[in-house]
Image (cartoon, rainbow, N blue to C red; front, side, top):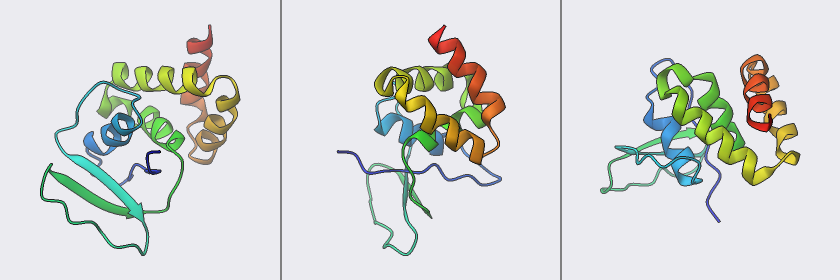
Length: 123
């Protein structure tokens, strides 16, 4: 089972930090140029020489957060990649996963972006 990864959100957000967790959870087909790893706060940062790796420390969340963050930053990650990830996530989790997705989107003030996209996927 893949570890939970949270996409780091900071002013200089790089597309790879959204692509890595989406790729890890097989929600996209793209291969990021560098692997972005987020580890729980207070834990040791892994030292990895190959592949190129960027490590950040943040609070742990489910990979659903990655999908919501991709939706929030779709202008940087690309609309096609973002909608593909959302579609795969919803196909895997079904209608039961919509509640969690909307809960996280509400917490991040992104429900106005996520809700119409979810409706379009299920249309």
